[in-house]
Amino acid sequence: MFDAHRLLLFFAAALLLAITPGPGIFYVLARSLAGGKREGILSSLGTFVGGLFHVFAAALGLSAILAASAVAFHTVKYAGAAYLVWLGIRMILTRNAEMTVEAAGPSTGAFRQGILTEVLNPKTALFFLSFIPQFVAPAHGHVFFQFAVLGCVSVSLNTAADLVVVGMASPLERKLKNSVRFRRRQRTASGLGMIGLGAYLALADSK
Image (cartoon, rainbow, N blue to C red; front, side, top):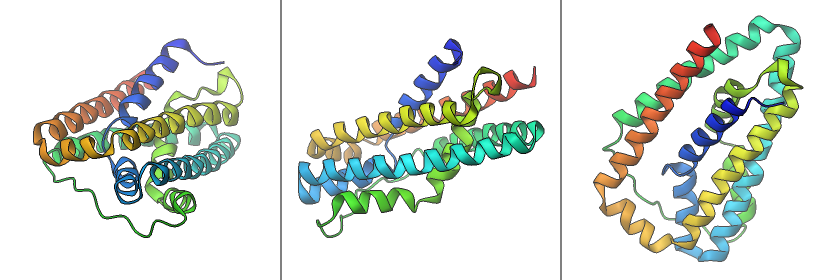
């Protein structure tokens, strides 16, 4: 069902994105520092559930697009590739930006708040609709199933990275706050990876 080359490329890209410091990691880090490991774990599980919501909603949307028009499906893929390139450029341009850990809110309902934080984030939906379709091939099986499997893998990698953050919250906070070089290299590497991925997939589909 999945092309081995593209599946490996997807896993590498999803892993790189999962370990790149961003809003999700900083949210879980803030909850962990404020309420301890238990709250951090519950927050991670909450964002996992919220991420799955976006995955299945996007899978349904993509299936509907393909059913309406193959041209529309490829338009979504090209637009998504362009969005990935733009995200990569933005990562590089903001590589020197300060990344502070905001104080977390009340410690009650960490799991529920994690779900809501992810579900109500439109950037998550936009990202899934631009990233995952690049690796979906209608000729290899049902689009909804392919999207759901890849989406679950992506969300699981994100959650695994969040749980690592929970386990090493204090030293990681010091590293992210104090090491400008660490942040710069992480964001530059991720940005170049995103640009390369978007360009490769756009050119591959144009052949």
